[in-house]
Length: 361
Image (tube, rainbow, N blue to C red; front, side):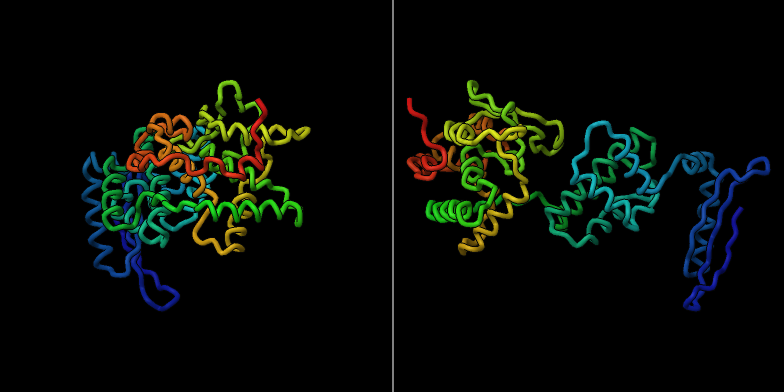
């Protein structure tokens, strides 16, 4: 049933290809090949597989569809009805191009996954994201398509990778801007519009980040139809969520300050968005401004954390904060339960009145 064929490699060494075939009625029912650097190893593998394939259960397992990981990932991308985020799509495509994707389903075990993720040389939080995207596919491979991937493979690998520090949850940033830093930034952005003709209204976007607790990508996607002034709320489309990043449209409450900022924006003919600008442009503008002013380690997204901290300092409860932030789970907001209620840090801030004047009553 088996045969071993020696082959001379380009470097002059010899490798041995072991081949096992199962025939029935003169036809090849199943065959496997594997190459070894030593003949003895090839013989051991060949005899082991011959014995396993002689057993009916072993042959049945071998005849089951056993595609390489590359095909599994591609099938997941193509057959998943729920829209897949760009980030997840790109990660899966990157994995499809990796040598590890040639590994067949039956050979994917926890050790193989640990070796694959460990060899990617990325930060623990990035590694965690990569593993999460891969795990979401592997978990459905057996129940959905019958591919021979053991149930505990993913969880066993996750435990090992976490204990080794290869993967980890994203670290919460605690950087908060001072009032002086924000004054300098707002002054910089205000002058940039008049002297350089910058089109992105960074003063308004900074205010929205703090007072609406929205990410810049969400701010730049809000439309006038999404704004419910009477209900003091806004429809945030594709709100970020661990399991549903697309199609997760959520109504979020608006603070009075956020409503003022929105109402201060001009309506542009033919444009449905309130802030019709590219999120990357806003993020880059903030980073460049902080760099120019010598403000260290402050990002545009840190203003969202500042907004949450502000509400906590104002004595808001976790459920009330969640109504603004859009968090389904209150676990993320528990970090703010120990914040002392010291009042509104931004009460009377001149830049709110300058950018979004209070309407006369």
